[in-house]
Amino acid sequence: MATLWSGVMILMIMSPLAISGSLTLITANARTVKTTEIRNEQFYDADDGIDRALSWLREHSQSLATPFKRDEFYTRFTKTEPSYGANDLAINKVATKLKLAGTNNSAIITNNTDLATPAFPITRDLPTNVIFPA
Image 1: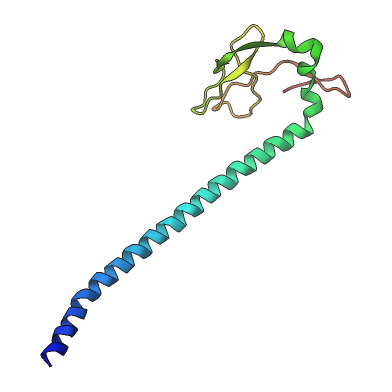
Image 2 (image 1 turned 90 degrees about the vertical axis):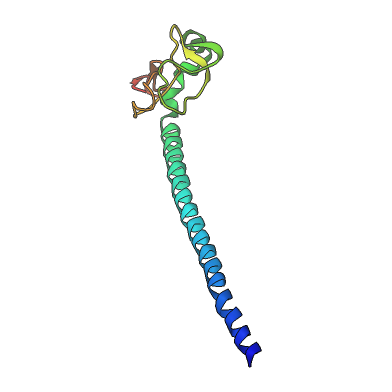
């Protein structure tokens, strides 16, 4: 009978430890699931932004092409060592090798002036020859 009671006592002492370990594991798994969910949302937001930018570039590619024509390229851009443009303000700056001719500005098209100050050469829509406000 004493062995039965000692066995029961050992189980009663061990059960809170087992429950505590299980709760710790469940909590860690819940945190992992939540973190993964947050990162997935961030990824999909970034992916959506890239998709919208690519879509805009595809839609307006004919309007942005003139500065890159052979006879205009070297008068509109200057090749430099990789460096940040004076107009690139964001924490995630991108070093570029091309700057707008006569400036230290990178060629940037943006609608968010918190990221950068937009700078792009004057360009014309190829089919209509109308100036395009990049």
